[in-house]
Length: 266
Ligand code: 2AM
Ligand code: CA
Image 1 (cartoon, rainbow, N blue to C red):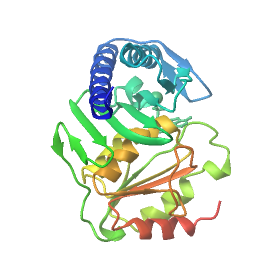
Image 2: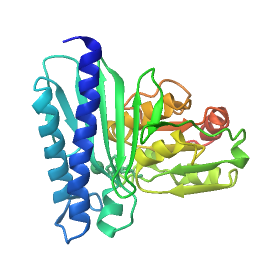
Image 3: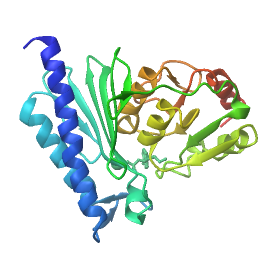
Image 4: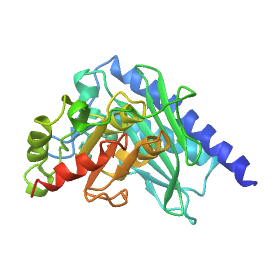
């Protein structure tokens, strides 16, 4: 198949997968659902599993040989380098408490590079999408990061991962404490994928978090970059999907964020 044609199919599959997963999330949101615990506080629901299963079904219907990395255990190696990185429900804790902030995140990677990302917020019917080199959109309209020039004028977001909270290297409170005295405000929304999209559309000026997984950041990082923003690790190096800390911003406040993070020793 021609490369451009194949890419058009990647986009169509991404859209169809989030649309179907969104129906599952909205259906579960309106009734009592079964919750299981992965750890003391880290939870998963029957909806996470059903959503991931449906997303994998849609992908494999068109691309049976592509690999899968899904948060809920859907790990299928493929013979080539193409891989789909899936968070079937980002913001599960919000979801189970009926705090209306959660989404679905899907990234498509080839030869180790994310080329396409889609994040869908089914409650607001907002679809954030990016293709490498082609910009980022919200419901089809191009989006761009904010123009806030200074950290002191910025609204940031962060999060606190629910696993290994006792590990001091994953303790975000010292960073939170330091940032909170330097910025206009910090939000803690509970969905890293949507936080990244909010940076991309300029509603947030920056975001950082420790201990995220590839499925939390694969799509959102590309969406930020394609919206003109910057994404890095804590030393301003390349952010890999497995980097322990992610910093995303409008670019203008990035250095200030990096400097402030370097002041915290952990
Ligand atoms: P989740 O709802 O898909 O688990 C909250 O700050 C962010 O951290 C959310 O995107 C949440 O995604 C993610 N998160 C929660 N527990 C996590 C864990 N154990 N590892 C990595 N990310 C986690
Ligand atoms: Ca999840």
